Image 1 (cartoon, rainbow, N blue to C red):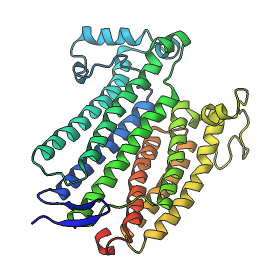
Image 2 (image 1 turned 30 degrees about the vertical axis):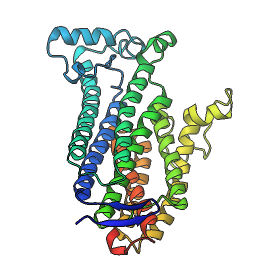
Image 3 (image 1 turned 120 degrees about the horizontal axis):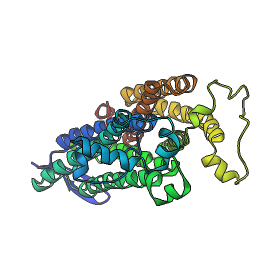
Image 4 (image 1 turned 45 degrees about the vertical axis):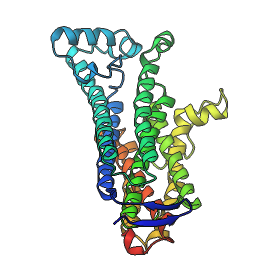
Length: 363
């Protein structure tokens, strides 16, 4: 018998849908997105992102298979400013090029895997009529976000290898495109988690959660922190200071370039971006603490997850700075950032559902 519940739109049928199965699938895809964020972090920190200068959606899934193919890829890389100005003078060998090529190739391959891991099961659930009413458009939107993520990734790479980059002798990608690329991934991650949690409610005949005002505010505060983290990565701003809590021995750093205006400095000056990322973190922590306290009775698990994630993230952030961006510490910092997004979305979802259902459903 089909389960039904009342919503402002009317009565929505659940069976023969398989909401729990779809929820588990979405969480697997979310785990793959976290892995994508980790590999993307390694790609950025190893300066591997410009090693593949073309986008080949099908044939690019395979790495070079012969010495001639490797030489051709290396020759293409040697034409871009990053090689001409940075790696060429440092004497980069083909073996060293293969190392950075691997990480960019792995990052792109994982993107293809995620696309297939979402699209093929979606088609299966759709054809079999297993998707609950009201969720098809949401799943299509998530698939579209995945496609945009790939497009934004290529636009990011193109900003460092395209004609404009060569004309301007730019040795890196645009930090704006990098932030769009990363924030789209994190937004998609949040959408996957929220939809999976809604589907768990659907399986119990409970309406989906609503994004309440305070929860939206917390997510916005966190989004600003994540955006500045992305700009930190794109500008290599983590290298401008190794001390904490001071920067270069002072609370407010010297060396900020105000010549192009305040807005430019706020988004593109490494010293100011680093300073804001350090101290806005505490605004995010305060908001997260309040969110965790509000939901602790209804879902102790979500409350603990939020506290654990932001506590670990703060420690890793400080360690990243003081270690001069030691690779695995910096990668862990980015990975926990993705986990913090998941925990915060979980908490926001609990807050949005708490007045509409028994507390036991949320635990």
